[in-house]
Length: 116
Length: 112
Image 1: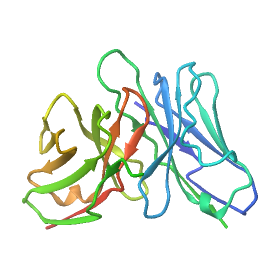
Image 2 (image 1 turned 180 degrees about the vertical axis):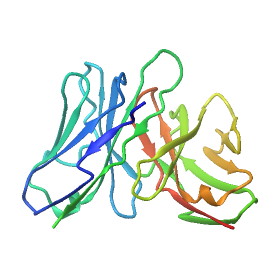
Image 3 (image 1 turned 90 degrees about the vertical axis):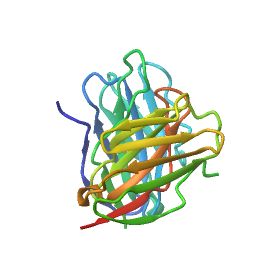
Image 4 (image 1 turned 30 degrees about the horizontal axis):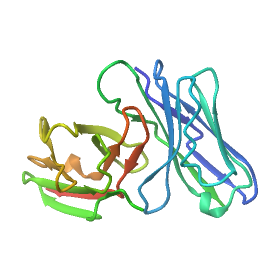
């Protein structure tokens, strides 16, 4: 079946502009996550949505970052007034919450954001 | 504070030999551990996982070992193949379905 998809695959923006990154999770997955990978770094958790619960925003680096998930499916990560340090690959993942076991997260291909 | 650490940024192995990738963690509350493999310009791909109540999990050429007392886990790949060349990330989770805490990754190169 279809995996996690993200758009755009690449985004170049000027410092100070706002950007929106989109994630379409695997159909039926109720949990959705955003991570980012800066150059030479590991993957850093940003935000996590689980069903209708309040999202876990503990990883968002500043109040310029926000995310929403509409209808329990598609999610948009918004970065306002972008800074050069926001340049990174932004990765979305989703997982199932079927009973039993731990729910492996399946990742999309990422959006490479470059702030000039 | 890096809760999950992969101290070797790179590893080079001959085809057919064993690859051993190591990972250390500091949080004793982690109850599940996962390994992901990542090729350039692609998202990470789930490889294998292990619950904290086990000490070994095997899937084909891949085996993960967990030493809870040492807060250490390792991924063994036997035999290594050139197609295994990628960056391998260790990750830990505290609650089922919660956020993953990743290590910095180890770049594995398998030489023919």
